[in-house]
Length: 398
Ligand code: ADP
Ligand code: MG
Image: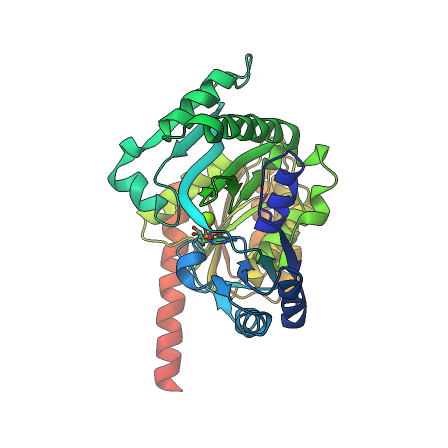
């Protein structure tokens, strides 16, 4: 789960990580008032669920409150496109107004879950700032990494080693050690999958400060943090992903035209692979999970149909405990409600499979059943091509 920079900074502040003074605002008038409170000169920062804002005009210095108002008015009106947002960008609905910091030097610092070792990894670089992705690609030796043993936790000598690798010395190095230990404490308490400070700066006056902050919470731990629910900004999320989350469905939008309903992440990946191999382009990844009910299947199917990019639907479900006739009922319910005439291929296996197939065949939907994954993927690609040819011929005639 994502949160905004200003929320991440509030959390870090609670762990004694120094951050610039700042206030969040939702209108240009508010931005102007907060700018006055900060003494006039300030940095206006778009709050979106993506980084790379600096290079895209989402972080701008204002020299007086009226200018802050002008900048904010323009930011609120548009979708900010950064290298991390995709071409359609994200709408700016909140702005952080922050004191301007005299930056001496910029560093990169993060603690991330490393899936390979199943440990937190402390990462730092003296080449922090807006070009860190390029540094990681062209000079990986400039990025220092240190795995944290979950039994001993992060030790101060390790934090010191990193601070020295960044080239810090004396009092600032010791401040950095404290800051790193505080970050680790925050990571554990808050179940973060990532805390990233880029840039961490040493100001011209010699103070250490987190100038940007990004926190991701581990979705598997959300149940023990009731407070996170209220922190979520739904305007930053794909609407269909929000509906999917309500029904506990894992939905990820992709850019093809075949909606895929699958149970289990492994089967989902296999399905996407085989579909691609047969020349199909998946429009999404929708996993209904193990114990899907008729309602859940129907909701999943509705979500797929709401995506206007979807021109055909491929269902690949391994029943096992789930009964195939129940799955079929869910599909028929949702497809009939939405008056769906798109090509559908259902490949399912498990208990009551014959009953399930019979229900689908009698349903009057534009549906075909398949026995194997490869066979199903081929069928849906063919049906989609056929539908496109029919539409073209219809247009010629009409
Ligand atoms: P992003 O990572 O999305 O580009 P940042 O918050 O890192 O956004 O800001 C981009 C750059 O803007 C930073 O690297 C820093 O140089 C500058 N910056 C950000 N906040 C401030 C601030 N409060 N004072 C001065 N400069 C800032
Ligand atoms: Mg940044």
